[in-house]
Amino acid sequence: MTEFAARLHELKDLYRFSLILSNEPLIAEQVLDQCLQDILKNPGSDPQRTFMTLVLNLRKRIFQKVKPSERPLSTGELPAGAASSLTERSPEELRTALHRLSEPERSAYTLWHLDLMEHHDLAKLLGLTEEDVSLKIQSARLSLLLALTETPAPEAV
Amino acid sequence: MKLRTVKSILLRYRAGSKKIAEERDMERALIIAHSHPELEQIVSNQGPFDGLFHSAIAGIEVSDTTRQKFEEVSQVLNSKQHTQQFSFRNPALLSVLVSLLVLAFIGTWLYLSRSQTFPGAEEVEAILKMEKNSNIEQFDPVVTDAASLGDWFTMKGFDGYFVPPGLGPMQTAGAKIFRYEGQQVATVAIPEGKYFFIVFPATPLGVEIDPAGTWKIHDTEEGKLAVQVVNGMCFMVFSMDEKNDIVSLIRNLPHLPK
Image 1 (tube, helix red, strand yellow):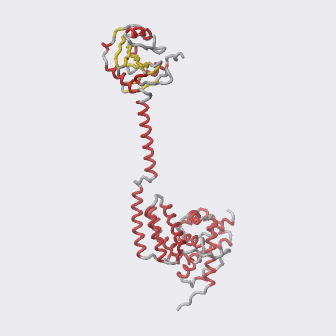
Image 2: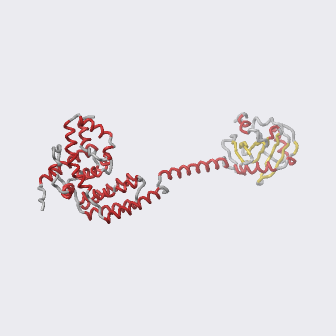
Image 3: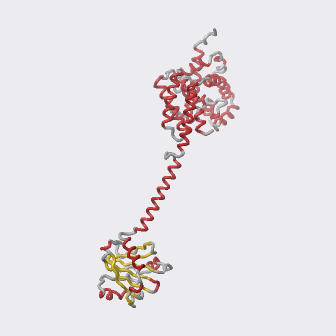
């Protein structure tokens, strides 16, 4: 598989990223489609750069449609057993909680999960230092835990 | 590595990540964490937590329409990438083109510098060609030294004959005058070295070499020749014998008196 083909394979992850940011499948598809059209017009020679441009455009366009939420940052350490308090939560609930995160925590945590780029590239994309990206990831974890433990899980029918 | 840095690195640790596994710092941070329980705790707490969200994100399915679109884009981008290899935007191709342009420029410059080293070089070449194609029988037998032929040429109606210092003592075998483009051209045959001295008015033929008395070595199809202009008259010397080195001959001449 060529480098370019490998990059293209990651387009599905871009859709996932787009959906987390927008929380609307239709918007996610539309925005991704627009970005892909841009890339098709000017694909560039460096797959890495093309890909980064795609991610950046995706982010910008989603933010034009869906304003990022502004929640206070969470600091501290993840308590032991944090995961076990969320095991009742469905994937949809977890994704909604992810969507509700503030920026750049949401992008940092989602892109970090998708493993799309090196850490220094992620920092460059978000306009942060590498250390700040680590702190945003941690802040995202704490905010997610807080949000999901604050609201009770819906009862099973 | 400071503990603060180790902690910062560990915050982005995720088991199963290819990108993270390639990080050298992460490897070192994990080794350090093994000897620090509080750091190890960070890793063990965040692992299952991140695992839940990782599954939630990975569980997002792409619609059939989007999947189809991805495939189309993949094909187009792949074909564009292949086309890119032959595109003028391709840096490798661009550098080759630039190199070729530079070579072409140097080649042209060398060609021009060879054929046009000074104004009127074409006239000099034409006169040389005429001289080489002429017959030896056209020469009047005159045996003397080259510097003494001034009066002989004056009597024949040619004014301005001169021989540069150093070449004057060379013994002549014959001399003649012929016409080129309406101008008289004086020629002297020197048996030693099969040299020929040619003198003609420089200005009417547009031959200019500055400053006066400067020798120019000029490569022609007929061979090398040395040429100079003094007081509006052009003097050139060449040899019929290819073994003779005009450059050495001129280099050994004394400088012109000012």
